[in-house]
Image (cartoon, rainbow, N blue to C red):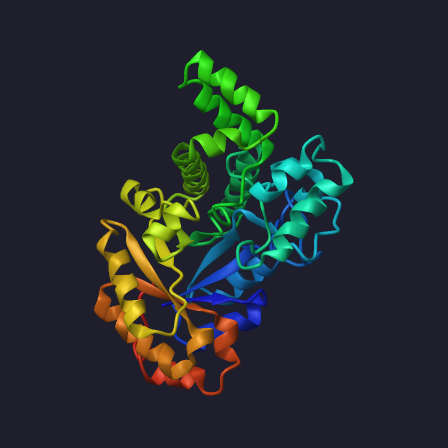
Length: 365
């Protein structure tokens, strides 16, 4: 069993041990900030080290995985005020939603209304945008995240790193300007001179001219950009701490993940880029849950599937039933989201300890 945890590492760790959990996903990077001792990004709790406290509290009773939000970097309705935050220092790294691109023509990323225009659009479409995303197609942003992952893995005795928000927000999330320039350069290398001239003319009035003309290539470019970040961050983590497990939170519908989020997670498993995926199966309907989980298990190959369980939606009794369903489907484990929600439910620990968690599972190897 794996249970996600709140940022109160010490107290929550004791409670997890009583639940017979064998691993904890502790959020070490939330939205462009650090919940550990970092010299790279602003520290969310100055003077504290929640990740270190979680590891210390585990006392070897369970594994700790560092849960890292990769591309989601800010809340749209509450922009970070810390001048060291990347939204302030590197606004050029942000994805510019397709609907905003034309309105920002002629404005540089350091213009006062550049970030606010992106934030306003994202805040008005919360179902599509969960916040501001940075662009994995921007090589400088990829290098920044890889540096964070490598630094954390080297200095903290974590058993694994868990990549969350390793995707674009949606089909309309757009690229950074650097990312779009790289996409256009790729297309230019593949088309003839007359087509280049035509597109150059169209681009003067439509900054998305290339994306509109070559939508399949545009989608493939974004998928490749996400995959490249997974590859580079995984390699850095394993280099820093050999034997470390790499996992990723993924959308459970394979087509939706690939086509709308540009998250080609079956290829990550097939290539061994990640050791495991955790499909976010946060739904009440048990037949739908089983169908989607079995589809994920069918493509895992030599990789692993840790099934996500929305404990906050289900309550303790239904969560216990879902754990048994996961076992029947042949998954390699499960992630209870979230530990904090379970603790707020009366008798949740007793229901799980007396039911599916009567015997403690071995930590994943």
